[in-house]
View 1 (cartoon, rainbow, N blue to C red):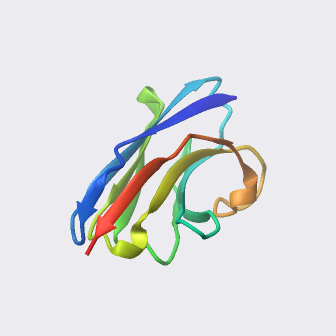
View 2: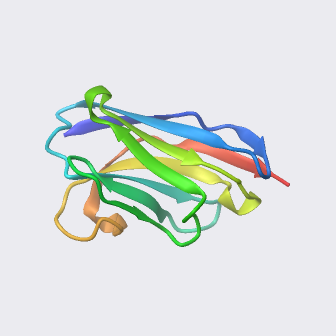
Length: 124
């Protein structure tokens, strides 16, 4: 089991870019996948993007496809989310998470280890 910590959230203007990081520590290498999720005020936490940890496939929510890119650096136990052309609708607390159950990489219920979240605010 790993502990996750997100970094990089801040306030930006619409159209700007931002890169988030998530650093994993502890017994991380059993994880099959890592993902980014977000939760806006008053809304359910939702899937954003995920990646196979020891592989190449990536997955994206339709709302961010073409704008966000998920990457990783296994040697640094670090997950990234490059967010481009940000919109006010992207405003949320962003969480990284490690997949702990078998199944779809887009299913939030299969992720069991979570970071504390980092706030991203996009102003119009």
